[in-house]
Length: 225
Ligand code: PRT
Ligand code: ZN
Image (cartoon, rainbow, N blue to C red; front, side, top):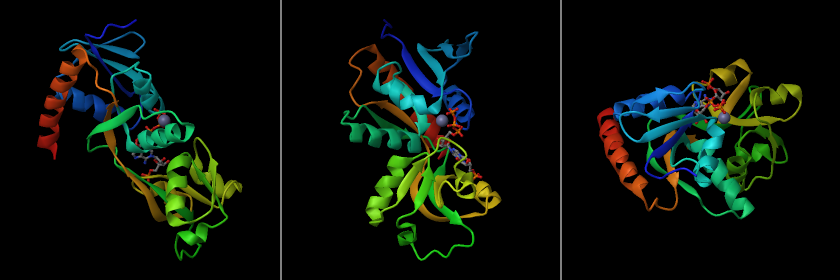
């Protein structure tokens, strides 16, 4: 059983959000002693520790109380929030700060040579994605019936493999779409990294630690803005 006099923050172990998340925490005055396995970093300057994990695991770690705060993309957070809603699990986490990095958009893309009169073009088609919930919500909003095909990676090659006609994937520069002869046609969701917390307050020493951390983060974020 862990004691609740230390705060535990989950961040991505390696990937696009790792360095900016660590940089932000360092600017807020946090320093860590790296552990041998590099999954857990003990907080030296303050009683705030890090857990280094896959980004997809972060909302679940907050929901189950294994971690107290996390840094994750809104795309992952909202997808998992919608999944929980669908399964009848309650709301367990919420974004408490936008962090200004990891910006991208979840977009629909179709082969370059298609005409694009609008989302109705997708009616009855298969759309490859790793974000079936966000895609389904957008399709409902557009009044379009299409079939999400869930792939965990390499979504952009699905049309060439004959697995789907269109894709719905994260885009930042657009270079990946270009390299795969696809064109971006509609934005489904705009995203950036956020600080995520449990929906229910801590109710112990972690509340004061979290409040202090937020004051420091707000200072850093206001200078950056
Ligand atoms: O191992 P782990 O599961 O932790 O890592 P991951 O591979 O799932 O995540 P990672 O590091 O790729 O992305 C982490 C988060 O960064 C995402 O959840 C987004 O919130 C954010 N982010 C920002 C992006 C991008 N930009 C992005 N461009 N995530 C992925 N991409 C991919 C996209 O899927 C596509 O393959 O980059 C490609 C497109 O990039 P452009 O520049 O060619 O358009
Ligand atoms: Zn991931």
